[in-house]
Image (cartoon, one colour):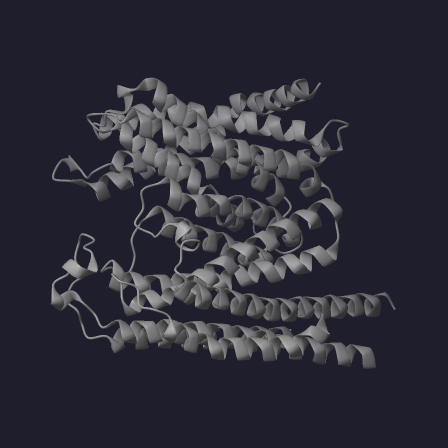
Length: 225
Length: 219
Length: 96
């Protein structure tokens, strides 16, 4: 029942998104513009500075993620559908999981474009260890989206939600971004230090577990008046 | 709570006046010399910062789950004091680092994560101030997640190779240093209690004013 | 409208006073040291530092302790001020 509800919520979001593709296109466009701006800052005489590619990739993902989160819940607010969802006789946490899954799919779709793009534009050897890369991206995105979904849902009713989402979200998710950037930067080295990558990956998993548990635990009281 | 205020004030003034004397008598550290004495204020302030973030986080959770407004008042006081003591930590730290490491700031795990914790609670205060209606819940959620970051700050030094002295420094102090150090910790604790009771009292009075306003509005 | 404005002004005045105090202190601590040349890039143990880069520790130490004292006192003072104002409001309300 729990997972069916979650899947239904996710399907609802995806159906809306597939019809308009608004969030995916705008988010992607924004992320690519970010990458372009960074290209001017970190490429000097044709050479990419240090591990810039890893940082650029994660910044693009987190900026795009913030945009997608804000827009997804703005849609709900506009039609007052979040309240309708909350009134439904289902577990609140299932709604949270459904929203989270929807946002995760959206971000993964964006990453499918962003990662090859960064690898191509900055000639970064991102695909030298595809399994580790996928692990880092999945765990990092999950950690970011877990906190993001909770805060974006809470902010639906707040007055200055556009300003407050980054204020709330960035300080708390910076550890996740740090772990993601450092792990990805290690993959760019000629000799990949696998043990260290696994260390960052396990740290990301630890954050995922903590953030998901806390989110599931607080979603219900936070969304109740 | 309010009756405690006078004795705590006197006690903390005495303790803080006595602390420099004890610190001055403590033996010099071999490699760092005089500047090591910042440690006697830096570390207790960091301890109070962590204590305060736990107070803020735990009472935020109580506020969220039990819906008690009293818990929220304690959480606000805790959150504000994370920022105050965090500022002390972040100012005294670089002053020490300038001598010991030769630079003001290093992007080291420990320093970054301490700055991060401070930023989270600055964000907490921002949200509480500008969040409008519902800001108390938003802040509570932020405090709980902020508290989840504290172990990360604490453990970071011991797991990763970092330049920051390890946390075991505290438990392996020689006797000459341990006495002034724990004296300072006690002084900071008393000072913390003083500021905390005053801040909670302020929040209680504010709640009373709001209550009176509401009642006046009803009439 | 007017009371809100005055409150905002008063509040921001207090914060700017606190910020100015902090700034003054840091400025004093920076000025108190002789200019020690550029900071070295690597992190060299203090004993291996060339003497020109070494700074006297005493001003920094005093600055640190002064900052702790001032920060705590300023914070206590802000609480006291806020409390005074709230209690004033309380008295006024109770009279009504």
